[in-house]
Image (cartoon, rainbow over all chains, first blue to last red; front, side):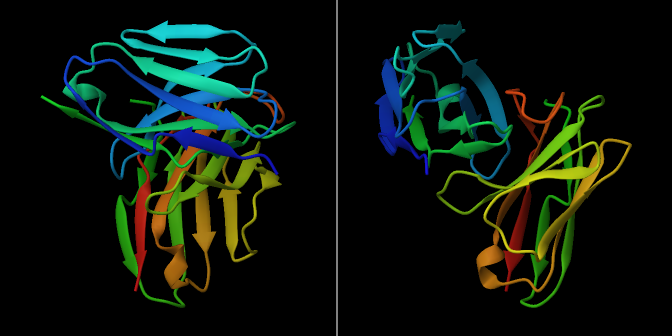
Length: 111
Length: 115
């Protein structure tokens, strides 16, 4: 079965610093989603990537999907306390519209 | 705001009881999916409904069941609750048909504690 591994599991950065979160799949990804979750709350959709080499940005967050479509990275520039939370990558199960997720990366931004 | 709402926000039950969780999808969204998220884990797919019919199921026993209604609302029912059922339950809606790769929009979740 396909699995998603996220690294690091947790990250503590000083406000203003850049950071990168990685998501690696054991198989080719059909669709890769990034969500943000505040503790105990619902998931907020950030971005979806489908094509190999695709890159999308929203405000200070950039996500990329590598050419082989087995790894994605999420990069935050000049982090702010509002970026704190749990970042989850999710992928489409092949041939189905349901998602399986990595275990998440917990980001803390120190003011 | 995703337009997806869930009720209740929190619930405490005892082992062996039954529970019903509710979700209201975005208007016009025909697909609803339910996920279970244990503490410190990513969400796990329970099942999905499309136009009121079950359209895919994860690795969950039959005591997890669901319903979807024409008014974009849905329910997750869990019978014979076990301690391990304690988790955050999330519903997610998406616009279109089965098999499409579409963005899912999540509700805020219902936190269930089984004692």
